[in-house]
Image (cartoon, rainbow, N blue to C red):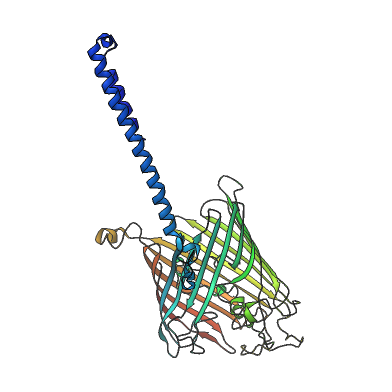
Length: 469
């Protein structure tokens, strides 16, 4: 069509080049008629050519579409059916993830607390802590799928009992986006109990080990199968209100033989659905849990959140378990103050399934199993970058690079009725981020653990590197 427009313009120019006054001249009139005939012939040829090109273009488009079909479609060979998937013809999935490696040097080979790895048979060890592939798909503008597969301590053989290796589907969700205030989510959901469980990735955090409250009281990663809604409101021009609310499977507080797993040593970690002993990972009772979080940000840099979890943890669905949590984030310039507190009540966990008082096998003092737990952490961060380093080595210390000094205080009690189950930790850290997604960390921990007759000190150094990919 562009060619036709050009010819039309040329014709107009040719016709307009002879003044109307010359029409009386017979010779001039014949010359104009000849020019018009030639132009008409040329226009006809161009119209035919444009039509032929259009037909050929449609044929090529059909051939391309046919070539894009999955190899198994329309084929009689069953071997090609593995390719008969919609994503083969139109890939739309992003693959990424994160990983971290630690070197731990402690005063003893003892574990450094609930949920933290020991150092094997010695006080010095490398540990491939986590390798976590991430998969994200845009099915449509409204349908999204996201999932993570977590591999912990993956260098060890899976057949090596007691090695601590763990391979699990951390979360896998289908989101249907309705409007910003309300969206639907279903699948294996990362539970919104406290903020740290939602932001537990190693590259995001400024210290190597997770807070104690996030390993025993709210055992991250805490995820369960379920469904619910989430969204965001804007009460004022500057403020924001986020919420999540789900119905999920619930904790399982007992092994198949009736042995309780909520203890002072492990906290709630062994009662999570992802490590449940129930066949096929199904619910251990007919009850379901309700979990939710509301976070309010009145201004940029300030957020306060509250979370709640309520469900039953026993096979008869008669013993309720409740978790309450509060979290906070305050940022001002290079300074940042974050933290979280949590409280747990597992009614009648001090008794076995027959109602008989049950002594905690992990308690050196012979306490009954815990019914109440509590804990918190407070962490201060200071972000900085000396300008002389940027002048000295600008290719290493760029505008995206930063150092962070960190101090964190942890305290938990996995059996709140007794003081000798309390554990405390002071961590001092310094890390360097060449870019925001990669971090090199140096931490020193002062661990205080109450024993039966005396206070145990188990201090140590942790070096680690973590990155998204």
